[in-house]
Image (cartoon, rainbow, N blue to C red; front, side, top):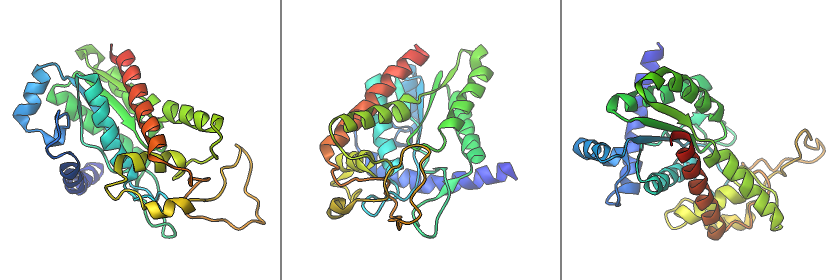
Length: 278
């Protein structure tokens, strides 16, 4: 049953992942994306020293009225490409467009996986890349859900393949550390607090895809959702919820802020990956 689910899911994922990848990456150089290379190109790249595979997970999730649902995947594709180029010895595996999450009829934009299935897919993908000949596998994710599972898979496979000289590692700085530091910087500069579909998400999508239809720019001025409460504090039951998918105030989002966050994510990832694989 489990094997059947994985096969079915792989077929479902293949078409959108390839189609979106072809639109996003067609003709771009240098070519560091596995799904945009031919097998001889992959083989040559590996023989030339590109023996690190980057497995970056995206996600399909509502992102407020102003951002398209595929934001995690779209940003992940650009982020992992930039990381691969900056590392110089890496190839980016196809981005998985789903993450641990749950669909909602009230805010219909999310397609989620169970944590166990998400972990199983990442484990299988890593296994396949190792069989292909990669010596280092780096697991990463653009969504908060799944970070724990990626760490667990990396630990499991790292132990399994250590004797073969293969490293499987989890890069968390690209998500948690970079986002935390960016939030602190925003606060120090007087920006309002926000999280999901707020300033960080919206700004990065404006920077990477503002001219590609990723953001409904005319709606950014109204991107105000339910407030981000201090940890442990519950919402006031006497106040009606906005419930539009935005956490906090995203109205001051700009492409310039998005570039700052994007550059931080890439720089943090490259630094950590180098420290993990040597």
